[in-house]
Amino acid sequence: MTRNADELTKEVMGKISLSKDKVNLEKHVVSLSKTVVSLSKKSGVDIGATRAKVVVALDYSASMDRLYYNGTVQKTINRLVPLGLTFDDNGSIDVFLFQTGYRRMDDLNLSNYENYISKVVMNSGYNMGGTKYAPVLKAIVEGDVRTVGGFLGFGGKKEVVPAIVDNGDPTFILFITDGANGDRADTDAIIRKSSEMNVFIQFIGIGNAKFEYLMNLDDMPGRKRDNTGFSHMQALETASDEELYTNVLEQFSLWLKGLQ
Image (cartoon, rainbow, N blue to C red; front, top):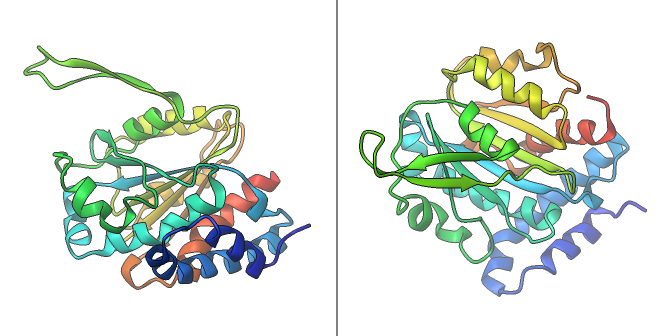
């Protein structure tokens, strides 16, 4: 039996112990619960009963600088926390920053979300750069082995990045970017591979870029299943909770039902 919005809100809020977190997050939880119930009725899938590993990939290219420093990304992070509490059994969200490469960050959870950007991201030592989608998607979908550190290829340390996608709970990737990627062929390849796997990728384009590549994903040939969605939210900082959660979850709900 599908729960109503009040029941779902009560369940999620029951996972939050500290009163300050209840105050900070309740309005977002209420909005998410209403969106989940609405989309569940629309799609015929009880999204609120879905268990999924939630992953957020955040664009860390130089053009995103303003959004990190003016608080927009932190405010968005605050609104994403309820997704982890709703869908992920451990209540946390895996976070990756990406530019031409990527960096896996500490998981986002109730213990660190309030100052995640200032204390985790800004203290990571990771530098902003260009924009490539494939390296971070590959790491999430199939894992990666790479050399980090060193100089001119010498003295580096081998790092094994385990895949998040597996045959258990589906993986739901929320991929937020403000610009076009410079590696379309490589991105095509990993998206085609992912179409045979237990993963859905929701791309969110922010800002004024045209996003031709992401807009044309639905027409990409050679996929077993359409497991990607795209929505353009020009001004992330002014989007309502309802708009954000609908953009995040609407196409995911259709994928869960097998309609795409």
